[in-house]
Amino acid sequence: MKQYLKIFSFSPTIDYKVEVLAGLTVALALIPEAVAFSMIANLPPLVGLYAAFMMGLITAVFGGRPGMISGATGAVAVVILALSISHGIEYVFATVILAGVIQLIVGALKLGKLIRLVPHPVMFGFVNGLAIVIFMAQLNQFKTTGADGTLEWMSGNQLYTMLGLVALTIAIIVGLPKLTKAVPASLVAILTIFAIVVGLGIDTRTVGDIASISGGFPPFHIPAVPFTLETFQIILPYAAIMAAVGLIESLLTLNLIDQITETRGNSNRECLAQGSANILSGFFFGMGGCAMIGQSLINISSGARARLAGIVAALTLLMFVMFAGPLIEQVPMAALTGLMIMVAVGTFEWVSFKMFGKMPKTDIFIMILVTGITVFLHNLALAVLVGVIISALVFAWESARRIRARKYVDENGVKHYEMYGPLFFGSVTAFNEKFDVLNDPPEVIVDFRESRIADMSAIEAVNVLTERYHKQGKKLHIRNLSDSSNRKLLKANPIIDVNILEPTYQKPADRY
Image (cartoon, rainbow, N blue to C red; front, side):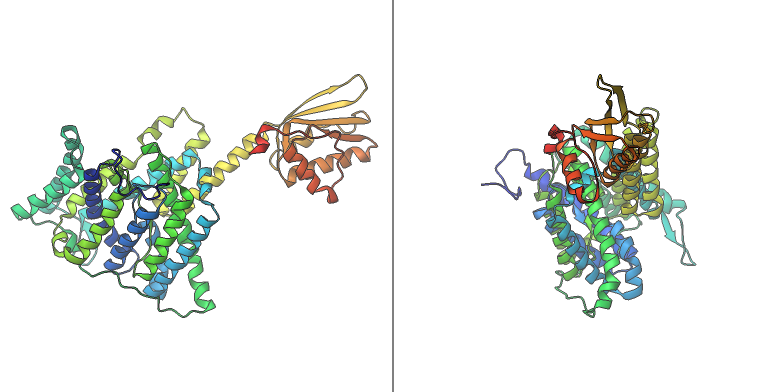
């Protein structure tokens, strides 16, 4: 029987102690981020915490990538901020549900595989930009509210205390694995800083200073919005963007975890899980979300590889909210800040610096551009989309330059053009320039054995070329078409006039 849920198993590859400890570490790290992201979206803290629980639990159980953590994220918070301000929290819940439905449709249509079209420079740019965003977000922890209500940098003992605790957290995370890997260094760092602050009575900012996290089980709640076409038109744009951002961030995170663990996740299954989680999140007082690259890296770096760690994290987070709120509120923000700084350092692809001077300049430009858009606009979907479009245009341009022709006249006076390279919209102009219609003999053969007709522009180019020769009283024949190219011409036969000289053959690539 096929094993779908790798939660409990007698396989020696799963270390249950590591999974549980990793889940506890992730749960502690989820709290401040969930609270912060809900505040960014102008929503109550519990809305972010409930979303982190629901997203984390559903995707951990049913998702396509064991070890990946989902929850409330900044990318989603930025998308729904304007709607939250203009129409209120109920419209946000309705939007989250609709976004989940869109993601379910994407998964059902098996469109998750399109993430394979994201080039490596775009991946590098996305990851590096996200690492910088994570790091810069931690700088706010070194600011305090002034008398006039504005944020200003800490100074004096307050700053030195914060810096010292953060530095100690980083030192533990870096140094402990060199001594022992029996327990996650991140969890040890958080507990150590907590013990020092409570034991010595150090006055420093804690989780409770951000917001209270005490609450009950997420209540079932149908969004109180009018079920009208007008409501649908209001929430649809936000839902579509949220679904796109969520899936892009989730699938890119899935790819990153695949590379780290040298295993392969299921992108379509992850789309279905993300959609289901968002739908339930919207019905259970949550703001929705997607995969969290920072928390996923904490989980993976702690040694987790199965679904158990994600389930433990989600359930532990709920227990914290329901029963241990006052205790968790005492956790120093310095410990969590140090942890997230190390996550940012670990997320950044330092190897990308080696690309400079060794990789194509266009790839370097794309990587920097995607990083810049991610950092300055905080729009992950736009950054990836721009990167993919530019990469596609560069590829089309390079491919268009590769089309060429070998020309010769046989003993019968027939001129042959042997084409090399793909014929598509980008190479049509170069293709037409290869032919000397006025000076060619009465009969011409174009050989496509090493070429292929790829799109409508290519079909029209062949048709126009045939007409050009016909106007001069000459005959053009097409020979050695691949099977796929022949099918395209046959479909277009009612509107074109092309002479195919002999039967087609099947190139190996046509079978895929």
